[in-house]
Image 1: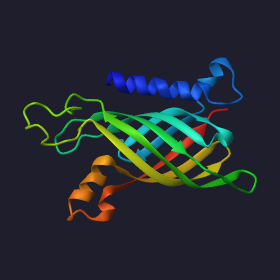
Image 2: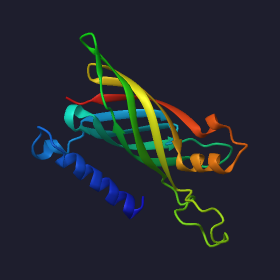
Image 3: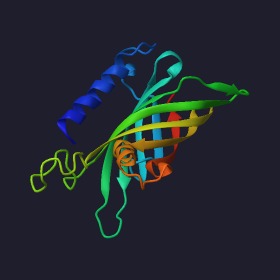
Length: 189
């Protein structure tokens, strides 16, 4: 993983640690959620941990480690994702359930392999690709249903390269740039 990504990750941990809240000392940096997600442009399966913070815990920062399976004779790959989610409101449904009708956010994802590059290799003419194959920026919207300390969520999102491709390729259909993911989030007591 690049030094910049480690620095950015450390920065987000510090933001979560010093966000307004009731916790003191080590409790401020102890993860408050565990997460597992299927698909979503970050690997077939990703799992990790994170922090909820802000008024009503409407902000969430998570770090996920993912897996891309072997496909058509290629290698298996690992991914790392740094994800920021905003949940503007939650509606209680009875005593133990809640519905979050809108979740939205963004994340940065990298493939942990030397097979992918941040800067275009010299074997290509300058500006031939114009993008990194190693890092993707993503945006998403979704919803979640919460039961006590666990939530089931879905997200609908797109990567930077898919959005750019749609803008420059009239043959690409609008819905082809989006991905769908599902996941489970567990809150630690």
